[in-house]
Length: 186
Image (tube, rainbow, N blue to C red; front, side, top):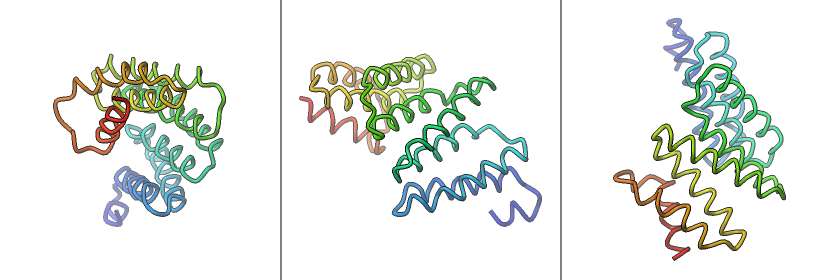
């Protein structure tokens, strides 16, 4: 990362900061990831290197959610969604919608219909993009929401067909989570 900065490779330095922040946010001290994510995002804007901008905004939102700052997380998700739509970077919209629903759920929103709608929209967009991993992620989150609402049959009906289409990646954490949920719903 220091070499990228030293040699004027600002976009790579920005991405490096964001990766460092994402890794910290997913570790034992999620709050430690916020500052590098913010710095990296600011550098991305200054360098006009925005390919991964919505991804890292969503990572920042998730980091805020991990430490219980849900409203700030939702603000970052709104920015990511707005940016993705305005710039036609729709490749990441399914995951942004899923993270938004997760943040609302963790914040304690009573509007299960809104969260379910976001997750179904996420699944639909992921399916249209043939993004199996993001479709599975949204289906898993939706199945968990339905299970928590005592709708086990509907939860299984949502998740089983998406999981059944997978042909690889069975060791990925989200895939394992989906499999465990399906086993629990059986």
